[in-house]
Length: 222
Ligand SMILES: *Cc1c(COP(=O)(O)O)cnc(C)c1O
Image (cartoon, rainbow, N blue to C red):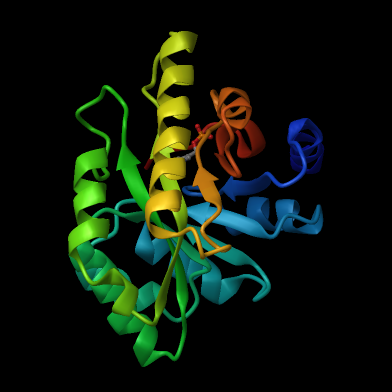
């Protein structure tokens, strides 16, 4: 069943858009079902849960960290994480750089932007992100690689609003790409779109969709 859902989603994605299967709160067995179907990118939002899964599951899985990340926990994921989507401060980026250096890695990171109308969403405001890129010596950090941005739209049925928020993420991506990353071909990711809104996100230029419940079903929060 999971294989079929993954196939159905993948069939709707244009070339160049990758599917991250968000497996948070779901057991190893369901992840393995997706793995057997060929899925290799998985997303998690808790350090301890992701690290346990990394240790138990096949080593060719690429683990994407998509949740709020505390600086004191970076050290647990730095040895293996494929991409961190949730960089929301220069301090956090520095800590990822420090821990990645200790394991001789370069960790791919996305800047998390806050464009939704909700107070609860984490991320940098566009102006904070501009200031970070203009004023902080981020290009001296040799063990992190900024690959793009991540964002969430408001959780609303108002399609026009969701479209506008995704469009503003894309516009912001283009702005900072030309201002700071015009010579950086790896700066190409726009991580946006979840189960309920990924089609709108893809229409607005998403390159990474993060889909959980449409693949694995509802999460059991215990
Ligand atoms: C849980 C989560 C998702 C997936 O949400 P679904 O609605 O289950 O598809 C995507 N992105 C982030 C940041 C999440 O925390």
